[in-house]
Image 1: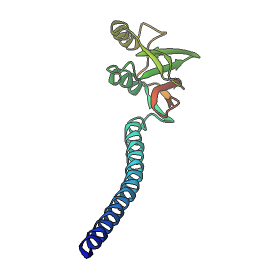
Image 2: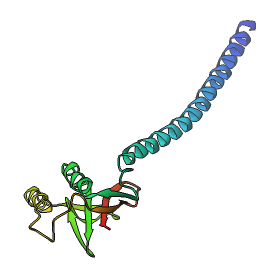
Image 3: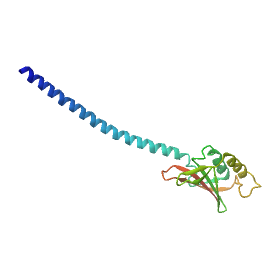
Image 4: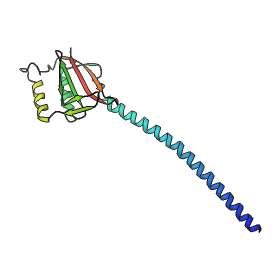
Length: 157
């Protein structure tokens, strides 16, 4: 009979130890899960800051017409993600894409049209489209509702 009581005690102690180990494991998992979520959130925020850092040269800065033309050329490969808006004499011209940058609903302009627009901004005989390389423009960055840069607006001074 002593053997049965001893076995029962060992089984009881083993079950309690198992439950304790599982409880410690679950507690550690919960804490690690929270830390992982916070770390991922911080990483996402840092990645967004790095992505937006490239646009810092345009954010509330005065730039030359050459920089405006270079911006159109450099973002030409991502028309569904970026829009260039040039305001001259009160009228706006949209390059690379149309739609609302604030809402994030951009529709790419056909590449052939974009190429023709790029040629016309450098054509001195085309007064409406020509961007003077020595002209001064005030640049602002336009973000969508998620804080992602979707457009750069250049207003001639």
